[in-house]
Length: 437
Ligand code: ARG
Image (tube, rainbow, N blue to C red):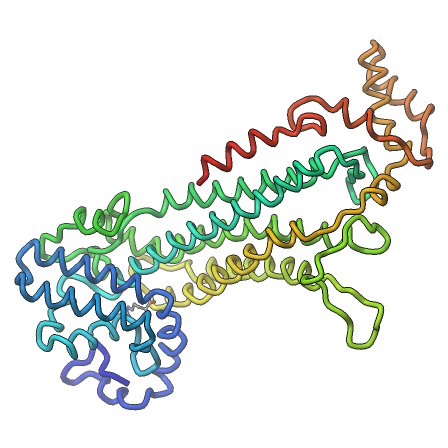
């Protein structure tokens, strides 16, 4: 292992370099591998820090240029696979500094003036999370659009509406799919709102108490594209993990919609319902039962929502800490990075999952019985002047639990208030999607 950044005369660090000791492995092995996800952000923030130091004359122009070139090369080498971030480093931060020392000698040792790994990891994570929210938002919008176009194509196709999984009132595929379009849009908006909330730069807070040099914090934050500076260093440290929890809770919201869709599709594709056949790429066979077509994709999407919920709980457990940096916070990285991947992978499949479904309108129609028109009848009687409770009882007596198949057309056409089957507001939902990006 390369010498830790914190090695000094009389420290234990030298005893721990060479092969990683068990203790060092425990403290950093997975962490340095996770830093692969943060590495390019860390390099970018390091470049901004270098420029900041140069602008307050704590680095000469030529040292700053040498460092900047070396950092640009590191980013490229890393992308191309020439530089590998592995367990020979304590962490990504150490790897950057040792690369710089290797490339520009003594000048490389100047890069850490005015910063700590505490603000270094915080800024890299912040950039990573901003990027993750943008990517999740784009995937949610693509999912919403797929749902919206199926809603438009099958706008008035009747299907039963359920409450408690019991037949309730006639509904439409347009209403069902429109619900996913709007709910995915809601989750995309949460990405936007959370993005705004976390769009502040912790770099320059150092170990959590500031430093005795006039760092140009605003300039560095602006260069990195942040909307503002996270001012108070202790507050910046206290937000570590809590910001992660907020981001993961947005992912959890997104995945709740994925879970609902997956639930509906797995239920409606059973032979008992028979409303939907899932696309051939999304079902699997059984190793013993030749007749089976299993909705594994829907089930794994549903299970992925549980994984995201678990990660949220994991982060929440870690962050109950007193003021100041604590190494516990490192443990918020694995759940965050794990579920950003899980969510993006899950969302990636949603548009095709929706597009490749085959609907069976005749099966849907056959599941709408005359009893489901009782609510319409009660409303109709009471708009004629009867108090609703009397109308309700009369409709119950007239229709009761009539089981013959009903024609739902008139019922659907009469649902004219905004959001109802005859007025789904799909244009409004589409307009909102456009504003979200
Ligand atoms: N891997 C560490 C983390 O994620 C980096 C910061 C280390 N800071 C320290 N004071 N040991 O928190």
